[in-house]
Each structure stands twice: as structure tokens, then as C-alpha cells.
Image (cartoon, rainbow, N blue to C red; front, side):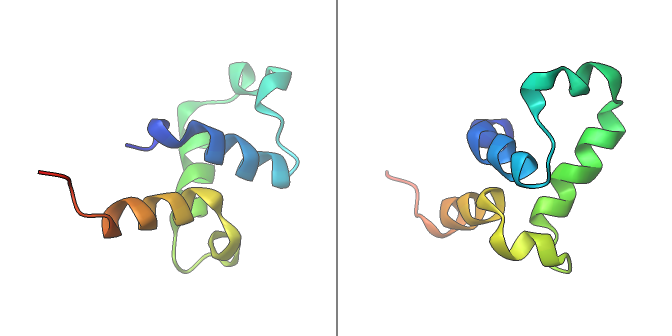
Length: 67
């Protein structure tokens, strides 16, 4: 579900000054990456208020599945 919104994750991280195309992810742990992604969707985090990822996930949850 999260990686279906990779563009939102990439743009949100870019807003924090993290360029995922720079190769930084090759030098960081999965934990480092996940902590930042979780911060994007954590309601208590001030950063989540403008997070593209949080907006995408919220829209996804509120859209009923087509039957």
C-alpha cells in the first residue's frame, strides 16, 4: 500500500532535503527510511499536516471499493 504512493513519498522526502536519487538510501538502513515514512503519516507529527503521502492514504481509505 505505501509503495503504491512512491511519488508522494519521494516528493515529501525531497521537501525535507532528502534526495532519494542521490544514492542516500544505499547508505541508510530500512529502519532509517521507515522512521521517516512513518513520520509522514503520523497524526501527531507537524510534518504530516502537509504530507502528500498522508493525503493520498486518507483519500484511498475514504474511497469505496468498486464492486
